[in-house]
Image 1: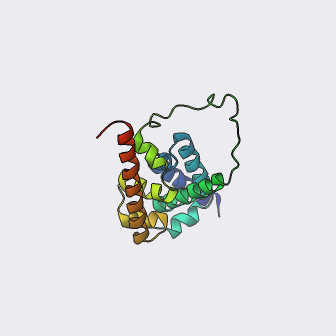
Image 2: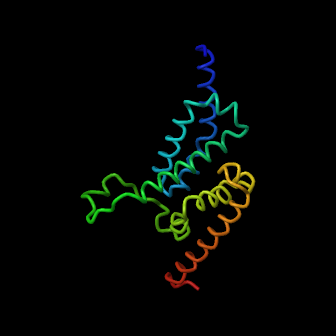
Image 3: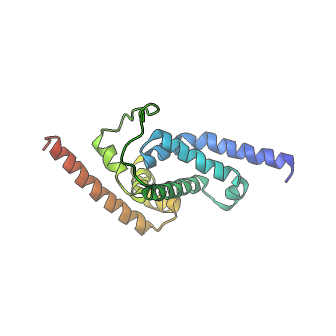
Amino acid sequence: MGGGAVARELGDFGEFVDAQLPGLLRYGYALTGNPHDGADLVQTVLEKIGSRWNSISRKTDDPVAYVRRSMANAHISRWRKRRREQLVAELPENRDTYQHPDPFEHEPLWQALRELPPRQRAVIVLRYYEGLSEAEIAHSLGVSPGTVKSQASKAITSLRKKLAGAAKEGGQP
C-alpha cells in the first residue's frame, strides 16, 4: 500500500471518528454506567478498529453498527472478567481521590439500568437512548431480532420491578 493510500485510509477513519464520537461516547456511557469507563471502552474499540479500518469499511455496509457491536462485545467481556476478580476485605485508602461524582448515581432508573446484565442493558440503550429499531439493534449486536425482543422484554420487566421497589422505599404510591 502506497503512502497516499495510507493517508487516505487514516483520513477516512479520522472523519468517521469525528462524525460518530459523540454518539459512541453516549453509548459507552450508557453501557458502562460511568462516563470514564465509557470513554475507555470507546477508545479501546476504536484503537482496535483503526488498525483494520480499510478492511472493515470495505466489508461492512454499516460501520457504526460494527463499532457498536464491538463495544457491546468488549463490555460484556470486561464484565465477565471482573466477575471473576477476587474481592478484598478492606478498601484501599484514599479511594475517592480520583473519582468524580456521577450526577446520575442516585437516580432510581439509572441504578436499575446499571444492574441489568450487559446484553439487556445494550438492547435498552440502543432502543430507547439511541432510538434504533429492533432490526437495527439485532444488526448492531449480531443477534437475531427475536433475541432483541426477548432481552428487551426481560430488561423492561426487571426495570419495572426495581423501580416499583424503589418507589415503595421512597414512600411514593
